[in-house]
Image (cartoon, rainbow over all chains, first blue to last red; front, side, top):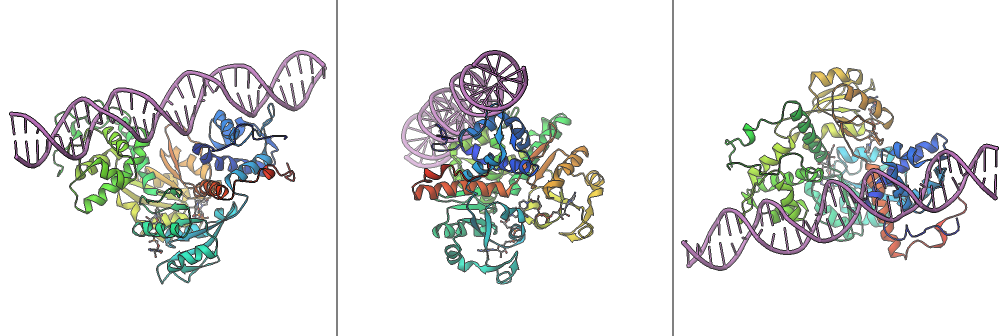
Length: 235
Length: 235
DNA sequence: CCCACTTTGTGCACCGGTTCACAAAGGGAC
DNA sequence: GTCCCTTTGTGAACCGGTGCACAAAGTGGG
Ligand SMILES: NC(=O)c1ccc[n+]([C@@H]2O[C@H](COP(=O)([O-])OP(=O)(O)OC[C@H]3O[C@@H](n4cnc5c(N)ncnc54)[C@H](O)[C@@H]3O)[C@@H](O)[C@H]2O)c1
Ligand SMILES: NC(=O)c1ccc[n+]([C@@H]2O[C@H](COP(=O)([O-])OP(=O)(O)OC[C@H]3O[C@@H](n4cnc5c(N)ncnc54)[C@H](O)[C@@H]3O)[C@@H](O)[C@H]2O)c1
C-alpha cells in the first residue's frame, strides 16, 4: 500500500465507467451481506451484468485495488467506490413538484440508504403546501432559494409539469445548485458546469416500442413494401 | 417521391439514433401545435438539444425526407418518425407492482398520449388487489399470464421491490413478452431477444454526486493527498 | 433562364469506449 | 526456494458514434 495511484486515477474517470460504478457497488453490497470476503472480476462482472475485462478496466481507473491470483477484497472495494462516487458524505436533495411522482420519490426508502437525504419538498399548489410527507412539510416554491441555502441543498429533483421545469431550473441554478435530476419531459438549457440527468419514461417506452415493432415485423415478414408511403397523408 | 429508401433505411437504425427520435418527435409536436409548417435541421436541432449535423444524419437513416434550401415538413416528419417508432399502432402496457411508484405511473397522463395504453395493473398484496386506479381494477399477480394473454400485453413495466423482479421477469417472458421496463434496482438476466430498459433513480443520483464532488473538490483544491487511504478502514 | 442563397445529405477524420488476449504478479503446495 | 495455478492490469485492435466541412440539390428573384 506504499504508493497507490500509479498513473491511473490521476484525472478523469471515463463517463461510461462512472455510470457503472453504482452497479458494481450494488453487487458488492449484496456480496458483503452474504459474507463474501473476496470476489474475482469474473464473478463480480456476472453479478453486475457486464464483461469482466470491462469491469477490470473500470476498476483500474480508480487505482490498482486487486490482488492477482485472488481477486478484490469486497469491503475495501466498497469503500473505494463509495469514496470515488462521493457517497461517504451525505447529500441534501430537494424535490420540487410534489404530485404523483414527487410523492412516490419522497416516500421512496432506497433513496436515503446511500448518502442521499431528502431535505426539502416544494410545490406551488396551496392545496399541497403544508402537507406532511415522509416526515417533511411541503413548502411553497416561493421559498425555493431560501430553502436551498438554509438546508445546503446540492441536488435538486424536478418533478413538476414540463411547462414549469425550465423556469425552475433557472432559479435553482441561480441559487447555486449545479446538479439536477429532471423528470419533466423537456430539454433543459443550462449553462456550462451544470449537470443535468434526465429520466424520461415516455422515451423509454418509445424505444421499447421501436424494437418490439421490429421483432413482430420480422415474424410477419416485414412491413409490406407496398404501404411504404400512404398517399392519403395530409402533407 | 418515386423511389424513396435509397440505400439507407435498408436494415438497422443505429441505437443512438433510435434513442433520439422520441426527442425529435416531441420537439416537432410542439412546433406543429404552434402552427409551423416546415423546420430546418438547425432549428429542430436546437429545440431537441443536439448538434444539427447529428440530427440530419439521424433523419437520413429513415430516408431522405427533407427539401434542400427549405427544411423538413413538420407534419410529414412527425408521421415518418411515429411510424418508425411504431407509434401508429397502440401498445398494451401492464404495470406489475402497484405501490408508490406503480400508482404514480398508472395515474400518469403523458403515458397514454402517444400510442401507449395501460391495460392492466397487477399486485401481490391482497390489500391492493381490487383497488380502482385510473379506471382500472388491480388484479392479482397470480393472473399475470392470463392477463397478458387476454389483453394482448406487449410491454410490461416492473415496479415491484427488487427481490421479486427477476422471478416476475421470468414469468412475463415465459408468457411471451419481450419488452420490459424495469424500475427495480436489480440487474435482470434475460434470454436473447428480450429487450430490457432500466430506470434507476439511485444510479442517477450517484452519478450526479460523483460530478458534484469533483466540482466542489476543484473549488477547495482537490482531496488532500494525505487521506488518500485511511489506515483505519476495517479491511 | 440564370444566379445567388439556403439547407440538406454524407464522406471522412476523430474519439470514447469495448473487447480480446496475454504478460506480469501474486498465492499456495511441496 | 521453485513451480504451477489463478487472476489482475493493460496494450492494441476494433467499433459505433460524433461533428466538421462541403458538394449537391432545391428555391426564389430578377
Ligand atoms: N407520474 C409519472 O409516472 C411520471 C412519469 C414520467 C414523467 N413524469 C413527469 O414528471 C412530472 C410530474 O409528474 P406527476 O405525475 O407527478 O404530475 P402531477 O401533476 O401529479 O404533479 C406535478 C406537481 O408539480 C406542482 N407544480 C406545478 N408547477 C409548479 C411550480 N412552478 N413550482 C413548483 N411546483 C409546481 C403541481 O402543483 C403538482 O403538485 C411531469 O413533468 C410528468 O410529465 C411523470
Ligand atoms: N418510489 C420511487 O420513487 C422509486 C424510485 C426508484 C426506484 N424505485 C423502485 O421501484 C420499485 C417499486 O417502488 P415503490 O416505492 O413503488 O415500492 P412499494 O413497496 O411502494 O411498492 C411495491 C409494490 O409491489 C408489490 N409487490 C411485491 N411483490 C410482488 C410480486 N411478487 N408481484 C406483484 N407485486 C408485488 C407490493 O405489494 C407493492 O404494492 C422498487 O424496486 C423500488 O426500488 C422506486
